[in-house]
Length: 401
Image 1 (spheres, rainbow, N blue to C red):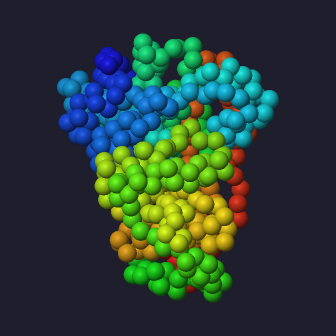
Image 2 (cartoon, rainbow, N blue to C red):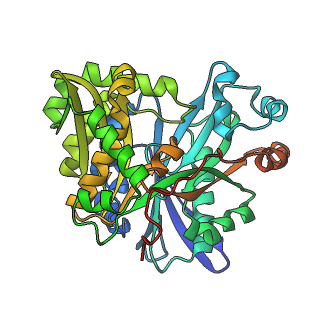
Image 3 (cartoon, rainbow, N blue to C red):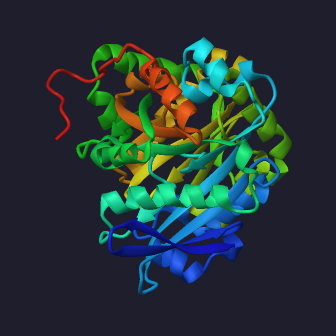
């Protein structure tokens, strides 16, 4: 543990505690600082992640206090090692210019300090009290990352980048204050979000709000997937099917672009044990064989985040498995009276056929070396989110309030 004061503004001093394990934090004060009761910042969630992924990632936890030792903020940091062949890591910077990227990453035994949650989208890696100004909050996050780098547990020469992920549009004005600390901001692929209309009392109401074309598309997916069955799995059932779950998850990972963090079947088991019904783990079966799964987290703001899927791609092609998962998520949200589904990135056009709309997301990055940080500027300007055709499945007279 490292415990030192840091001055983030004139005449105001704050203390920063840096901890190597979630077991070492003051749990009562940590919970007090999780002001909005974010499940991704709960000790039970973080403990499950740390215990199952500590061989792949290093974790650090920041606690911020004012002069009276009152908790005013917390943050989670993962230390990610970038290794092996550089060609496997181009997606770190979202398709950056090839020649500049190679210059910056040619020494590939680098480490990235990631402030945020590698396993969810959005502002799930930090929380600050309402009394903490956005200016101070961004300054403290920057100071916390520096403090971690200065700790004895990290080789300074290997820490190349600081990355803060991800900010929603309503926070851009505040998060842009990170630029005063030499961070460069850039847009990443959008998060597809479906608001649940208050008039949708059933899945049939949802279908009725669509045009005939997209209603037929939905019914076609259900017809193709009629042989599939699905049910919620307990932690014990996830454990019993862990080998198959890992296989299905690896299928998707192998098809995906680069990701800084990947879960394991054991993580799903421990997360289910840790947060219970807040983790919705749905298994899909064909002739009693597990052919897919969908993992989602129920959030305290009456929304649900579809986190991860695992697929048998042969079944997906013949039985519209992934589409069925998406429609089932809509039905679940309506049944549980939720207000929003975060479908995440990727497959944007497909998700828009369900009514999901794109929500911008922004990351911030800084190189520890001032010269290399200056070279980031042309790289950042070259980054563009993936393009896709946005579909609107709803009738012309249907609007969200």
